Length: 243
Length: 243
DNA sequence: CGAAAACTTGATTAGCATCAAACCAGGTGG
DNA sequence: CCACCTGGTTTGATGCTAATCAAGTTTTCG
Image (cartoon, rainbow over all chains, first blue to last red; front, side):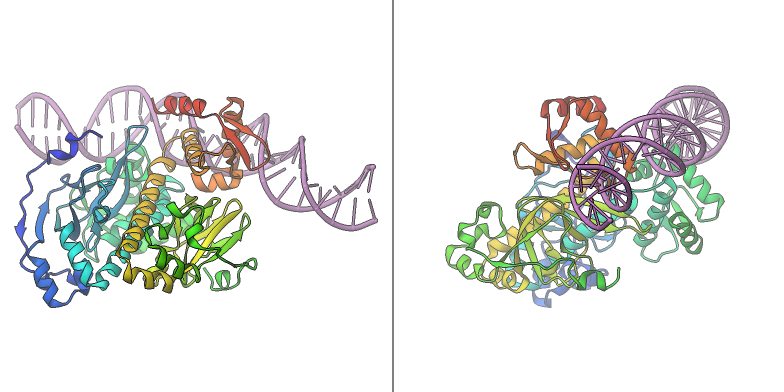
């Protein structure tokens, strides 16, 4: 990957000062959940909020990792360019997920991370994390927990979404999408091309699978990119493909 | 997974006292590489060496994580039982890799980790790591580096081994196997069944792909489970499938 | 309104799963 | 020693799934 790809942001990013981490809506899920009030206040000053539109990168492969990010809302995808030259989506992440942890070991970012929906993230500069971690052993534990969660999610992706028939992979993807919607009625439904890059299917196959699930009432499409999922029917369909 | 599967070790494990981490052959790659001599000596006393035969588990899914392990030699596989009830191998690891890091956040082990070849590991109890980490910030960094390496390897597996035709996946698997052989002439060649569970292929398909690569001179089988790889021909074959 | 992008649908083909059978070690016991 | 078994592997024949090729249709947006 050439330097240009990450040195020029695709869209100007508009950071705004955080209102304060103490009052954050996702504080209980966030990296700083374990910090005492005093430290939290200090941390807030260096944290900025960023809002991204679908397609905007959080960061790109190879860029020097200057910060980590906490997802406050929305869904992002981790993607890589394969040796064969194609794009492969290797993971999705949603609310509460920590992105770009490799920055903390001073490694360049290892993937492209792109907003799938409108996304709000908190940008936390590396030095702030390092500084707080020195005084707070709890924070080190929080970091490791998140690393564990990321690895587990990645293994899960390989085991469940990269195996089996087109139908079963699509059904398991729906499971993940429901999970990521945090209990909301509306679920983000990726484009057919995105689905293909997640499940290693041809675009036409994704389309046919979605069409079938729609006819079966598992998916009810509202507008493009938004749907509701009939959870009961999803369970039943999953049962069948698994025996 | 039932409790029995991990509470009864499949084979008695014979730990022997470590000769001393300071003189370890893989010290430069190992977790404690950054520790000063004084701390290292202290650490050695709690570390035990374990030798495993092919098929022996290092640990099993769901077991309480009481220790981490450094691979001194040999190759291990990470596997999961999928929702559909099948086995899926989600990653391989070799010399220098840290296993079972989830123990450090007091999580149960998240995968089955099984020896593929004869394997030597160092078993390091969780309390030892925690104790040393308090005094050595370097160790925390080492831990994060290893977590980063694991996540990167997992993403790589998804991007390169879980995509494309049977042939290209098999070729990329060979690449990984060469990598894991640490420059030695002899390469571990998995059984056809193992290959199938790594690449999501039928056993017969794995067999046919191996047969073809053997006829092309990419693989030269010696005894079962051991082969040499013609690196030049491997490169050429990879070029072709990727355009 | 026109062009481009995303999605859908149909027809055909290629690749892989599946079914079935043979083959070949290494080991066991007569 | 040989007959027999077992588990891993190979090989062949067949059918199904999903890729590919090829139009269409709908949506988006300048």
